[in-house]
Image 1 (cartoon, rainbow, N blue to C red):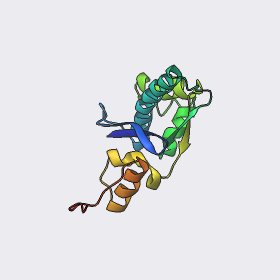
Image 2 (image 1 turned 135 degrees about the vertical axis):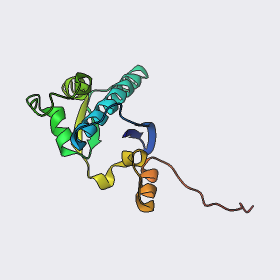
Image 3 (image 1 turned 30 degrees about the vertical axis):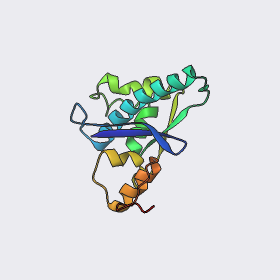
Image 4 (image 1 turned 60 degrees about the vertical axis):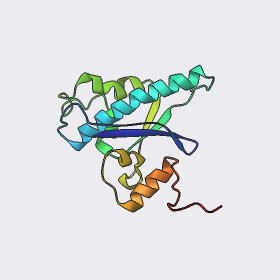
Length: 145
């Protein structure tokens, strides 16, 4: 399962949660594939913002909670352990990071907001990530006027 979200100004403007179309051989590979999917959306969003007049002069930060996947986005020589990864997933490395559209930065798993789309969470984490997405909960019950 891969998921990502893009947040601007305290609210989610784009997100995805879907099953990966292949079985990854490691958590690093699974995260790398997820980064590639997020990179495609990132490029679309950057083009959209350019089209509506918001210049995209600096790279966008993409957060990832897997150190190995981050290394793969930067290291063109790390081929021995990644030669089995389909070329289309190297899009994140070859087209997004290499061309300066994104910087991949580590974030601890406890702070990975996109986890709300990919796994069961404790109530505490669910509320934390919901708030980070810009969602607000109202108490149930009758409304007094």
